[in-house]
Length: 114
Image 1 (cartoon, rainbow, N blue to C red):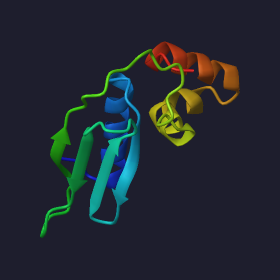
Image 2 (cartoon, helix red, strand yellow):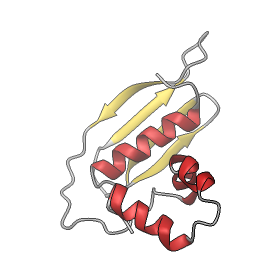
Image 3 (cartoon, rainbow, N blue to C red):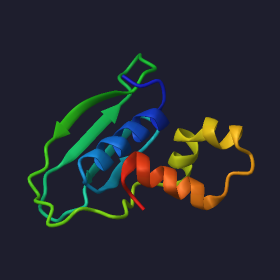
């Protein structure tokens, strides 16, 4: 369960990064959110929604990937600057003079992506 759609999306992105998978948003509405694997022919999918008479988002469908990664991803298209800002917020606020290269290094160390 997730309090907000944003928290659900962030969890899906973290999962995609940990599994070296890239997804594309298929449906994004006020009550539904579905992402599918970016690889052609792969059934990988995650679906979440807000049930009727509820306020929390729940994930109801997780279809595993059957695509094979040929090599490790160096850059992850789903790792956005807004997600990095949210996940590293306290570090960035504590060091107001933090340079971009320090953020890049922290991302490389924490998630192993450039």
